[in-house]
Amino acid sequence: MTGKREGYISWDEYFMGVALLAAQRSKDPSTQVGACIVDENNRILSTGYNGFPKGCSDDDFPWNRDESLGETKYQFVVHAELNAILNTRGKSLVGSRVYVGLFPCNECAKSIIQAGIREVIYLSDKYADTQSTVNSKRMLAAAGVKLTKLEPATDEIVLKFKP
Picture 1 (tube, helix red, strand yellow):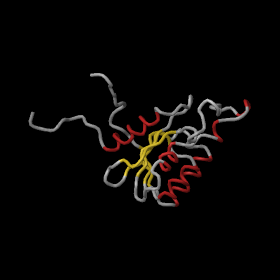
Picture 2 (cartoon, helix red, strand yellow):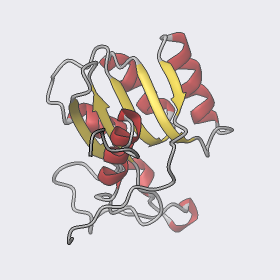
Picture 3 (cartoon, helix red, strand yellow):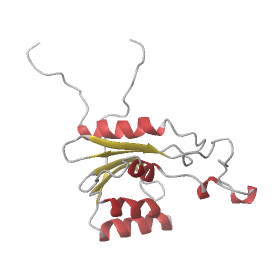
Picture 4 (cartoon, helix red, strand yellow):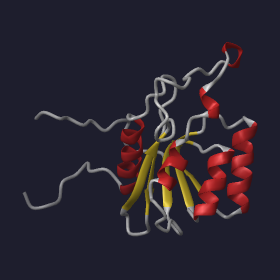
């Protein structure tokens, strides 16, 4: 063999893959989202996924989405982007990129902007028409945060624990 291997994934696909893998830690029965924050040298600074705050048992808080049934998860769940920001434990994120499976809501947009993250790379924008996402895009654009919808060259990355 005289040349390098073909078919390897790009940096963007790699980091999105890390975000999607982080999402697999979420116990949310309806929506699993992961985030991966990367610096300008392509080093991973942090990851996060959507779930309840530390110390709040997954068994004691609601996973319900329907307000007519009482309490919902929305008042308690920490989104993947904010978890990734908090998981850096104060490291500077200025100039970094965040990879996330789902376009950030307005609350996460505020944290992304305040943390100094310069680019959001996302896979899905399925809530594009909601007020939360419209407001998110407005703030991110005003703050000069670049928005990139990732169009991966492959549909899947397969991980095997056994050869």
